[in-house]
Length: 262
Length: 351
Image 1 (tube, rainbow over the protein chains, first blue to last red):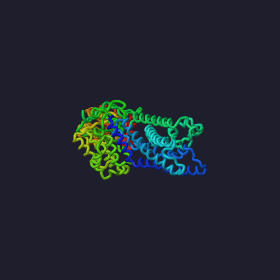
Image 2: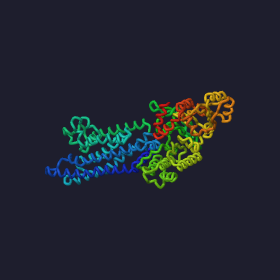
Image 3: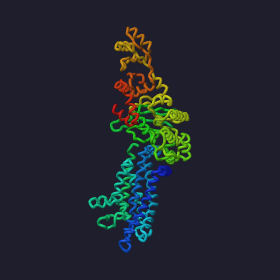
Image 4: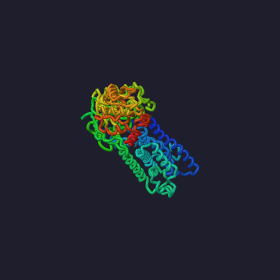
């Protein structure tokens, strides 16, 4: 398949994304639900710090305060990824899609790349917006962009949001249904944000779930070395784990698409 | 071999159910070829396999000598209208056609052209959710014509349309064929195909029943019969059979004689000294002929008339015998509502 043809498929998938009001609004919602609560969380932490002590708290906690709202903001983004794939099946567009692009690998690659690039684009806006909103909320405790761990956390957040969307899109391609996919993915992601993944009895397994691994770089899983919340792997290893999850979902989705009748 | 659709020994099996059973035929350019069969006969499945949407269990479907999947920018080679409902309800008509155009490197100006061609230019920016069935079908046609393709496949394009819409599609298809394109259109309505198609490919239960010109098909299948009311049907039947007339007894006790005329039947009755209370000519409709051929008929004789056109005619009469009482009509309406899949299952169970 030529580069020109591949670009045509990508362009078509991008038109599909931008011509649906639902996907556009859910992407805006994702950005708003990251930055808005980010500011409120900053305010809240700032109040707590003021009551506790005079000295500046450790930067890891500030990173947690800054990026915690991404656990909420990721939900609309994941929903976007699910709808981008699942909507094809629900509406029957999949038949038109495969008539226009009959090579299933080309269609699938274009679709996944469009989802990933869109997620990355939204993350590239939402993550810095969240950072600055949270610093505004933290007021005197706010960090600068070049504070320890901040550039890595910002980069990591963008990568994480992109990868979790690719993971969600791949899972939906395997299940061929938005409803089933959301039914599985949303509880999975709430498991992390509600801290249920840290229950000692299940942590040995749950700490390797995609969101749990990917969020280490934002310090959202707790301080490293902590016996309750620490992880036996570092932030970039965690990013590697979520990449493996996304890759596995991508392959699974492709095999399903290739094998099944449309 | 340009512009030709070549179906070669194509089969599709879902578990134990055979939807398409060793189908072979060729669709040629410059004429409308009707793909005729009752619901559930395997028409949609065959078309989906030709478009690479469904994987054949056996055989292959070629367009221009290649599999659909191997065509570069396929929308410029083949236009397809599948069952209504392959458009996302939240997308506008323009948005739907635009992504299709982009995928095959068709200029956006062509989107406007086809929207005007099908008369949707005024509602192009409205979401498809609010479209009527007729508008949705027109959008489907617009999508098929987007790449100005020499080959067109249309699956039941007149389904649910009002008479004006039906006439519009009929004229469009005839016009496209007159331009030298290959037009392959499926329908379960014999009457509609008699008006539209130059050539017919008839299937039943996934098998080829006829591949012939529409005129030949009509001549061979729309024959008449003589109905006889007599107090001595058994003797009358023997008298007619002895004279070489094919005859059967209908459910109401009357006799039906085929391939003969009322005068001859009357003469034979007189010669045998048999009382006749009523005698008259009846002409079977084309629709009835089609149903008889596809084994979906209500009261079909064990007729050999269609045999020339039948590749696998043996179960036609067989199927008719089980349904001599005419109770099948409601049943047929049921699976029309339930869509082709349930029909396929039904066909499989019977076969």
